[in-house]
Amino acid sequence: MQADRGDGEAAKTTLRDLMDRLEASSLKVRTLVVLGDLLASDGDHTAARPVLCEAVGLAESLDEADDLVDYEVNRAWTCFRSDDSELVVGGSDM
Image (cartoon, rainbow, N blue to C red):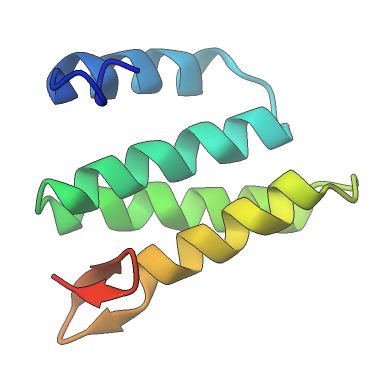
């Protein structure tokens, strides 16, 4: 919600704090993907890439079958696909 209201830095801080407190879960996957997407949208591809990699790795390690996790992994891969080492956000090149 903070990012929706234009306070991207506060949103990133909140997401990082939440990410650090969460156990491995679908909620943590979602948190990582949202943070990675926000970082990529801001042009910080260097910071976005490891966050998105962590999201995908965590999702693949979870034993739970969860549509939300599947959705977030697909979203992370959409952000993570690269052309010339840049991330793709929302299906369009950055």
